[in-house]
Image (tube, rainbow, N blue to C red; front, side, top):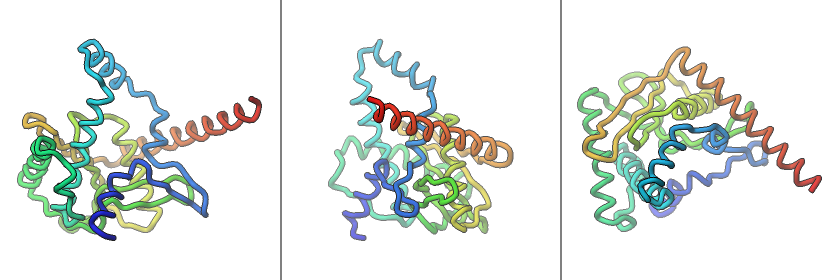
Length: 229
């Protein structure tokens, strides 16, 4: 894969097509979109009262988040990020998240040995797909790490990570631990290192399976509606 193809693949991850036995299956983020997000509703209302176009605001944050991911992934032996694709202002803002990552690395003393970045997997058992941010060794243990560029962590982040954990296990990858690493996009947002284990991981996986059931029920209902229309 060329540098250009690698960058395009990363930016197109939200539209990644996953297939099992030649048939298309939903991705993790698509499945979790069926869940209500109360905090998002409050935020949308607050932004509206302030006269801010949330679509444009979210698009801008998404570009910065994508760039921060690409910068961190390059540092972790992933593909080079495209220096010509972003404005100087976007690069300056994304560097805040990268600095937070460096600070986490310094404080934790962690040395990350990359085995896979943007690892695309499917579950033949549950018939869904997903793309894992980072998988590799930290010390002598295999870790799944999901990097988030945001102000805070929410329950759906844990549901997502539980699904990626299932994908790795089902496809034969050893996993000794899973964590969400949040790196902020501003100087004062810092970082959070959240290790997900035990009952928390199990219960998050249970929620994801219920979301998958709801997603499929909605799809079946939509097919029925089209047939009777």
